[in-house]
Image 1 (tube, rainbow, N blue to C red):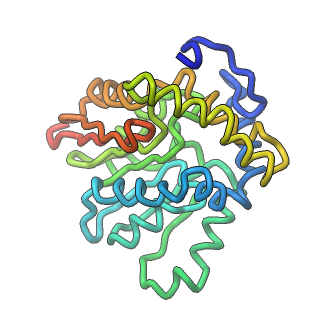
Image 2: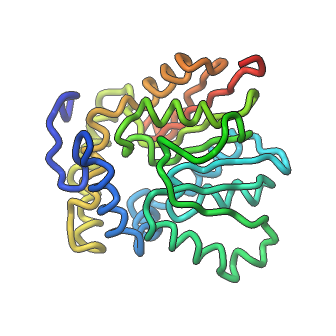
Length: 254
């Protein structure tokens, strides 16, 4: 194992307990202007395919209401809108939302005839929306950054309509030991280089490995979905489990 599950946090941007929100907010304020570029580089462009897979699994129907939690610069929000959903994107980072808003006003998107997206600043663990309000609730690369994994999952469940779909896209933990070791070595030694080059600080991207230490990953998300009451929660492993998409459906009688 490249790290112990209970290893202490050492990254300045990813802290335990009550300081997590503050420090992760500092992180995204730092990386927001180059966030999309670095995503393309460190994933070799694959994040775009993974997000398309998420949208396919969401089974969007025209006119459905979708909530994209931790929406960041809006990739998934725009994709949900292109699929026909009425989208609300929520994120606690004002700089990330500024990038998303600018993208929504860009000619490249305005000519695609997609519905307007409402971007809001807020906490994914305590959203302002009524119970059972959304047909689709997504969170991509955000759940492991929350102060409380459980609170984030409960909030997704709370705002989902009966029959609504809950989807989580995030870094995973491969079952294959050799593949897992290679993956964590990439996160430990190579990904921080992007932070050093583009943000002047290697810790901006070294935080990814730190955030995975106590994150339950795809199996833990599936277990929590089942605990909440989701029907037949599914795990879709991508790239050998390095990434994963969890899908759960809130039963009609819940």
